[in-house]
Image (tube, rainbow, N blue to C red; front, side):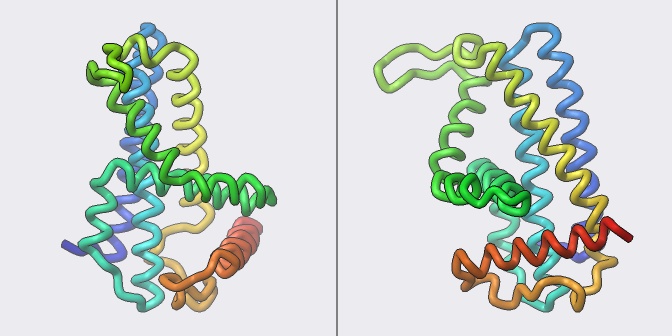
Length: 211
């Protein structure tokens, strides 16, 4: 299955709408002190928002005339850990664009470990499990108020950032590839080249927001 540019635009808007609803419902559960289930919904909201950047990457490829591996892209949109990795990369990129290169470097080094841990917490917020030392893990014992509140705050932050991002860059179908950074070498970029792309993107967004 593949998507065209207009479908990608529509998909990204729908993801934001769904994430907003999930966060609202998570807030209701949190007020009722149903912390484990509140965590579940805010976690899913963050996964939905991470999918936006997976789609953005595919859309940028399309308008740049670069082949999109749709089989891999669709798999990433379904795979939980892949979406969590994407969110970590997104946050790292935001830190770099904001001028904090050290946080970016640290985050990029811990992408896999972070996604594994967060996926475990998501599962533990729903299901009874067993720890490595044999203890029975019940959702309400694993997810406390503080953890649920922190995840809800991160979901709100992710929503705000994605809404701002889509507002600044506009629809992919309306983009002029000649005014965007060259991504023709995206599949073979070194770390320094990727950072250069982030710097160019940051400048593009700043210039766009001034208009």
